[in-house]
Length: 308
Picture 1 (cartoon, rainbow, N blue to C red):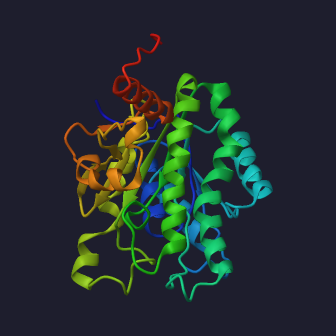
Picture 2: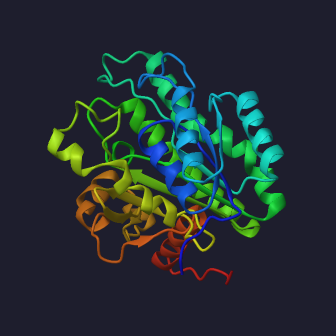
């Protein structure tokens, strides 16, 4: 089946350059009407210009597509609401949200100011929350919504000098995990893209030969698979250089201790067993873990729990 976004309306944040631009062009090429959102700031969040967003709109229109530019600051609820309202006024609805906007203010935690930490978390995490909140009831009313948030290996695995960025990018994983549950009965699906790409934010950090392999255009096809009508939900898709993989958060089977064994030294002695990978599983939700621990604890103590 060919993936098509005909008659779909998408908002892509941070779409003036790099990955966002590639995503906007990719959606438009498959029929979507696209709101190209970009505040036009530098990589550290300073400055402002709408030229980049208008240039992407011109590219889309030159190829026969439909698009509009909007310079909303993704952390400003009033500006984001105006963007959503304009899109609905123009095209009648919004179906898709791609949260891609971001900035970097890299420093070691020792040297980083709280202002720089807060600003990066605000743009990446609240810059995902605010557009989602503006669209959530609209998606529910239409019983249709597709959302992709952007995380990073810095949040999933860590990266020296990026405590602010890593914290923000891990935060969107938690947001996605909850909203997939709350949105399921309304046909709202949320996923996460974990890209590694040659963009303004990675220039100077990677060799030119590597940057050449990691063009944004090698990532966007993966994004599109997370947004179509039959897309998955609650998937973290790693992407870079035309390579794709799924990131999963596993929990080991673990060990149950009796009341007389609840001692730090005893638990520490069993740490290899606690961390053993055999029997590890993906938890579908927080209460799955609660039920698992309750069942293990009950079995350890010879207690039969009521059937739920």
